[in-house]
Length: 389
Image 1 (tube, rainbow, N blue to C red):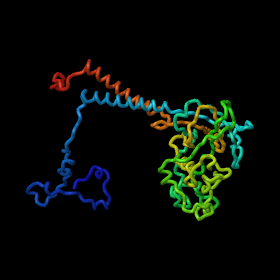
Image 2 (image 1 turned 180 degrees about the horizontal axis):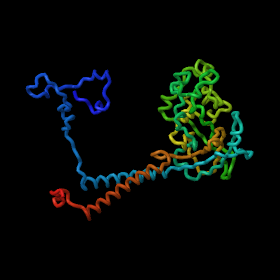
Image 3 (image 1 turned 60 degrees about the vertical axis):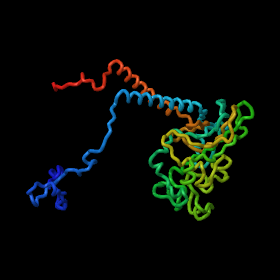
Image 4 (image 1 turned 180 degrees about the vertical axis):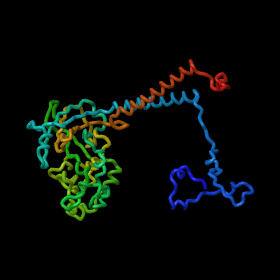
């Protein structure tokens, strides 16, 4: 049988003698009895012989121009609707990276200077006059220069443990897999770095700036995705802190309380009903929101929902500053925002739709003018050439 181009340069070894070439006796010439020849002809089917029916569109002005103008008009309408919806969102952003306490000390410096679990409280006056009283309002915390998308950070978790099916974490949790001979629950870098600042919004009694006021009712219920709450995060059957599950584990090094006390009223904990936290243990929604890692280094996560509407006036943000970010040049912000039918504020999507619409309409206009002044009839015989000179 014939050899391929590859074998002509690289002779096969001894074991290649097992290779058999496919022969086709039907291809032998009449009278050549017993002679077999190799046939590389594909099977006589429509697919292999490229005889399937096909349709090739003919690009003409009657087909191209309506498509361009149709896409342009539709995209322009969608883009304008998205921009209008984005501009209807009311949003207020307050940075508190270097806020100070009542004694004038910078909380960031105070937190960085101590290794023990401590807190620093700062009060930030906020004037709301954007009209938040017309729609539901949400409070987010925002972090900048925080790379939750690092491969090792994203990988450092153990999903069977977060579903309450496993006491110990897998090798992916390294280097925070166990401590002092006990498995860490929940294990991994993502869980250990859980955000633990507390944010309270209070309404000042008068229009003057204040340092405390009447607390605004906030709730942390239903701030996580339904799929996360119902499927990905589940508590073990035994929820006793000294039971068969939690008693055999230890808390993450950076946590002030064990996981079984998340969402339980506890001194020193940032995840208690006092601060609107909802859910206990692995089902705590503050924990679930944090564990859904962000794709970009600058991100925001939902912290609380405002139960009632916010009227215009003077407010104060009372923040227990626990989470250090200045060591990696990060920033922390509180974002008070409403939403529209398309979600939060996002001008980019609407602008991109408008840009594509303008391009389509511009190209369409160009083709119309070109066809008007320099066009020709399709199949005009004057443009045919019979010579090859």
